Image (cartoon, rainbow, N blue to C red; front, top):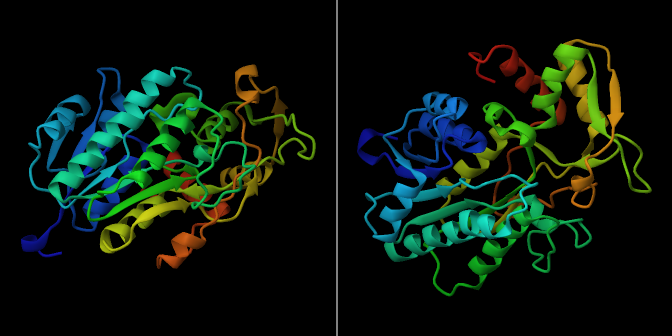
Length: 327
């Protein structure tokens, strides 16, 4: 892009895991980024994340919401809304509905009033136990936790609106891993936690299975490398005529054993996997199988191949070994 036609976008959750990767990717592609997040004094990792990309201006989450309500934001091409509380073990439904669902509604309505494009993060958590399948056209879903519910309720509200932004697109991200997730604690990926476990103990701990038909380690997830998330979002920014709710995964479920073996290989170590008890509070919310149906995404014109599990793990391990190395 030449300087005269640089597009300005707002990215919420810009200091978070996916937000940092998306902001970095888009700024490198010539977009002018306005960053929004919520940073506490103790959020040293997230503050460091803001240094990973160029941004024009930073807004605190609450300050930003006030500007949204007053229609007082500077002109922008699009809002990419990635900010949310993504803790799948959070039990305060009222808090999640306010922070995730209602906040997103305010941004959507702002985009309607001001003719701004709106891209946002939904979640594969909306699919619950998977009994309804993983089609992004399915609406009769029953999430297993309040986080998934907060995302599902916005998806449903959005679909029901008669007035929509000039472009709107929701992305149901599946199991994402990659750089800049250090701040996520217990919600960090198995790759991140396993990397550190193996360095300390030479052992990777995985949850036992409590469901017939699934042996230990044979639980399956659709693991997607975060660089592919950024690529999908760039595609939609480049194609403003594409709207709807889309699954964003590889379309191929892989076992946690596959992931574990890929991690040991990337570290140059012999596999040593131990199966541990699953926390009681997680047993009823645990997804034993997820696999994105990406037919709709492909039909929209996204043809790029997704990073394989093994290659994504390898790239991430390189980054973790030397955080100054670009994965």
